[in-house]
Image 1 (tube, helix red, strand yellow):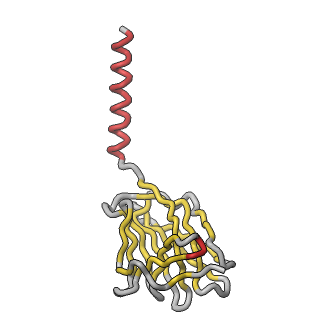
Image 2: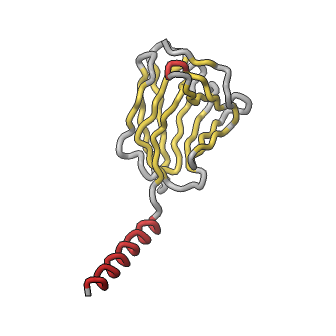
Image 3: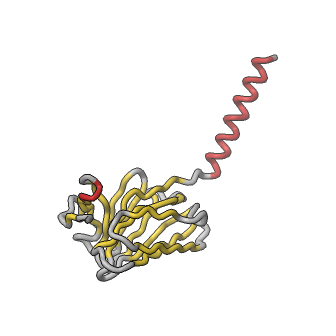
Length: 165
């Protein structure tokens, strides 16, 4: 059985790591908790306060994609569904729901629509809390990055052509 130690090593309204920010709509303290999840050899996972909305975004407001997330329901009773809402850079919205049916960590994969996101959010219930970990995200390159890449490759090609001459 999974045990979550509710004594948090970190509690605040937001958490930043690797250029991404997790933010909770709950008031501090205890809006985001880093819980010691002994199921996973003493590693830490995040959870939010009851009735809070958790939002994921980049710290510099750039676009990102998400491919998967690990979820654990607390308390571990009943089957619970959590719905993720992604707001894309063009302001369109995508949603996907996952149902947790066991007392273990579950990896859920997002569909292909969860690319070019400005933010991703999900709600905690009154008694329906989710611990989350291993959020697999990646930044979406800016169009200018592609232009620089193409320009650099063109210069390499030109330099190689000059060497052959």
